[in-house]
Image (cartoon, rainbow, N blue to C red):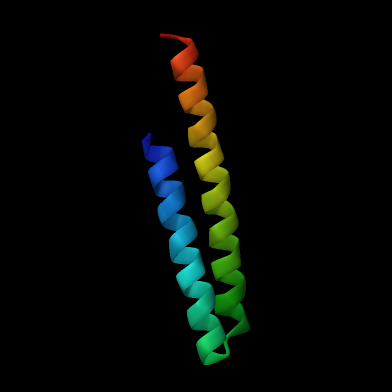
Length: 59
């Protein structure tokens, strides 16, 4: 795993937690921000996946 994959997973998990907390307290803003962080995390993970593929091809 590279740092983009790790950071992406962390952002995704953090976003899920933020979304659930937003649901629990009734904050739509927190829910939206949590969903946004999840999306960002997934994108960052995919960037890391692509970097891994490229790096493996250059070895």
